[in-house]
Image 1 (cartoon, helix red, strand yellow):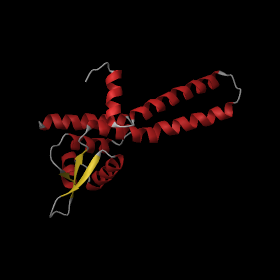
Image 2 (cartoon, one colour):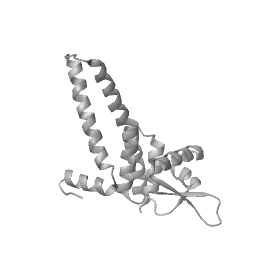
Image 3 (cartoon, rainbow, N blue to C red):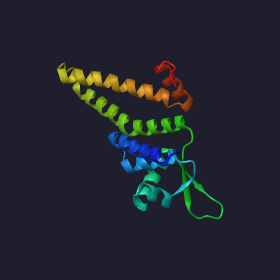
Image 4 (tube, one colour):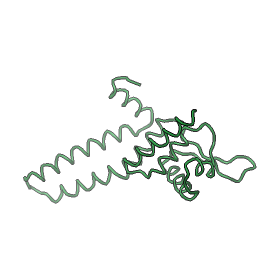
Length: 165
């Protein structure tokens, strides 16, 4: 892969991650691994992204907990090496699952809690909260259907995009 193209992808993915509330360094580490054919060690990653080894290590730990990065050992080598999850749909499902758990599920719970305290209130704020509860519940139900497995996610996206790849 062309180094300039890889660098651009890493930077754009990092910016996108930051917009989504994901640590930019973590998104850049993920992008570097996605755009690399070879196993990369901690030193390779920190040098390529000009970040500290500690930062790279923390990013890798988090990415592994999300299930989008794999750790490898090479025979006779004590160092750890890393690759991206090879299946982008499996990666997508892992990311959406984690984001749903961290962001959507607490919003659904908070909305349900406020609805429980509204009672028969008919004001405009109460109506917005009822509408928000329906919207968030619908989003959660769609996410749950997508998160069954990567093939289901791919099928649903194909249907939504009218069969476009």
